[in-house]
Length: 271
Image 1 (spheres, one colour):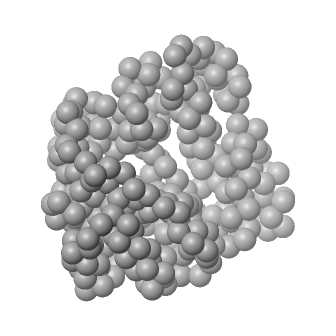
Image 2 (cartoon, rainbow, N blue to C red):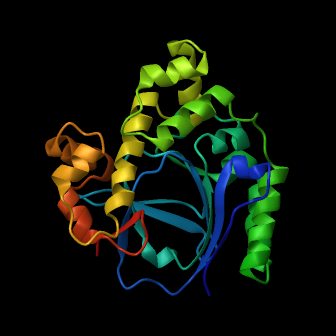
Image 3 (tube, rainbow, N blue to C red):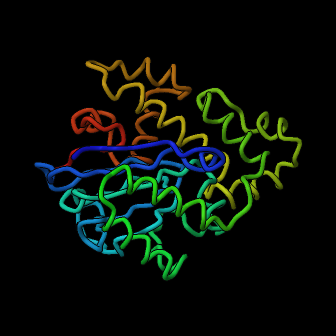
């Protein structure tokens, strides 16, 4: 029991950051807030054939979907049910990786959970059944990696799009969009169009999201936090700007983020 994960072999590793298998008792709390990430994620629930997410307060509602879903890129947080996070597998795609798998316009998948059967039909049903029958986490990971290789539909990520994303990933607090566009050799309109189709998010919002995520990684395990310094070092105009970005992407303030931190970088404990 526990978390088992692997990075797939080339060339799939250019599309997928990691494949993971989670087999643990239910958490002691009911809900968790998951922070937004620019890459899509595939989630396969092996305990229940259902996934559940919840809307934010004041009127929290449960939204139910299939047990195997492709979650598109996100720019806002979502709330998940820990009761179903007992036996579950997942794929964390690199930005643009899901486009190369499905050939779908990622703008249409933004902040949506798509039933895997709607994309791959009976192949998706057989995959879940095979994973249920696999004897070990390692066997399940191999099966899922093989399935991804066999069912890829789209072309490789556009080199200009990949370069732009990598540049913003390295230093989102200092990168300037005009400079990024110039480096690719494409016109501004052409790069922005390709970027939105393959990544699902516009260049500017992508840079903002990665700047927010850089701050989250910086303060995740910090004891005390000087938010004025964090804002200055992170490329924000001031602390108020940082607070606005936390509200936009996480749906909460930096102080609430600190209070709800847990052991996992992207998960906050709600109740």
